[in-house]
Image (cartoon, rainbow, N blue to C red; front, side, top):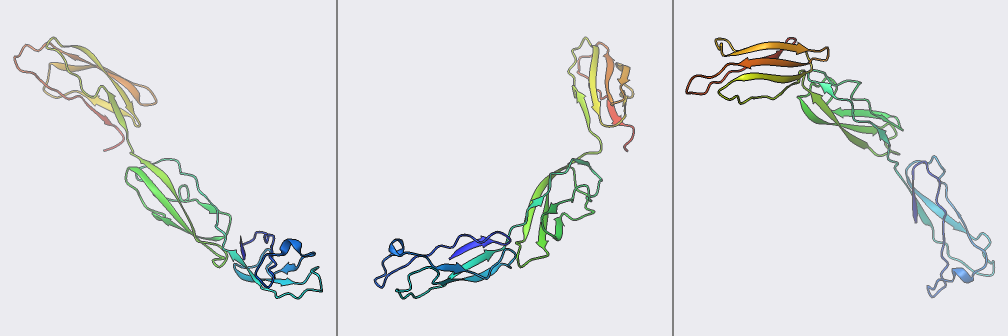
Length: 231
């Protein structure tokens, strides 16, 4: 018995000749039988008989022929689906992300489905393919990853600054995905923003001055940096 996959060539059929004692005498018998089957290249998945006939075996011998079985297994579809480019939060899943293709016709079922809005983070997208020729092809599936980025990313370097009692001049490097604005703390006259610079890529620099602390206790203030495009 042998097997092959749907729409592949039949394998080479082999045979064994046994004598009445059950001994293998294949090598000492001249000629060989003909082994045939009704299964063709496009035959559906299933089982087919392999039928032996005398062929060129010596006519002086008597043979009892035992059929074999050719099993044609379902083929496995090949799904092509690359991990999509990252999207920003608020973008619903659509053709730009759910775009798997396969080498056979069928129905694609996506999880999560079209129209879903995912939270910020890394997510798995899954597709299940049910082939049109379900009798000849297996159900196939594939999973890819999708990164959902926040609408706005703001990076401050440093995020905090420890200042000695003597005060001084300090800078904050800013990297943002949207335009931004910086405001100093209200009612704190000992700290003041002296300069703000931002380039077209929303990268910039905040310079601020801290006056000498003549008090015995420490003081704290917050410079607020926020997007001008988001609430």
